Length: 391
Image 1: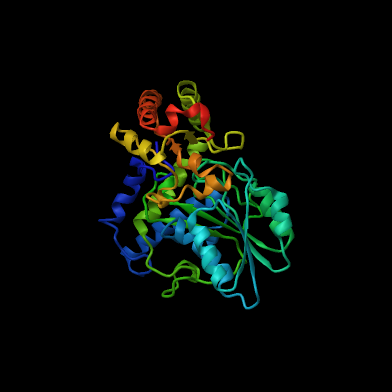
Image 2 (image 1 turned 135 degrees about the horizontal axis):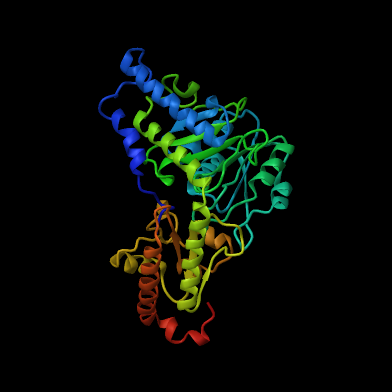
């Protein structure tokens, strides 16, 4: 139950990739037959990605993953500005955006970090108020990786465009869970740059995408060959690119079926089961729109890290927050930005289901978790005197 950290490689994806590790191992930039077989596979995958996003093939840039795509979006737009530029992002972004923004700030880019509501939402009015004449880029994630809260991206992007700024969204946790339509008539028609990551959508690790809308000028971060229309140098990772294309084809089929509704129902049954069995517990961001697989629960009077370990010993994998911040001493920056106290933030655990999660696994989780929570609370000094303690 930690699919937001990573997902398994689907068998169909592995089978699509298999020939390009052994038989068809050519360099996609070579002009001989082996090279052209690889080039054909890359372009076929690019078509699959473009079809999923409803965009042009030429607008797809293959990268090594979500972090590189986020960095390429921010640095690619802002690093070569000759006049003082302004970036707007939020306090609840993934660290791939937050740390990139802080680095740009050290290099004379003005940065505004928008605060969220207690439900984890960015209000359009807050973005409108933050816009300046020199605002060049707005970067706001589509679905939060810790809470699953979905932002009003269409409205936010429209505000940025009306002010003459470009708009980037980190859609790593939205991809494969929500339709992503970048066409002229689509919900995301005002989005100029969009990030995807393969290992969140049942493709391999080490592959990602940055959508770059036509006519957006992007300075490369890597310098070398002319790969990816001179936007990302480096020999293409053919097998993983093929895997990503196949995974997105499967995602399109999944999204068009009844499966997303069934996954949401499974998540809701899990939440209701926990709330019915465990007292002094709640859902972070419960009244905001969320992706169908994610539940962030707080269990007062215990430490999330201890619960994560206890559940792991019972064969249940969960997370105290972003996998990228695992082991961090500080409470989740997302939850504290939502106004949770440090104690409640440290008592919060993320459960994220995958397409492969079954009813039987939910039943088992609903047996394991209440018992583990009860045992840990017995060791908590605040649990025995909880009636007089304000959490």
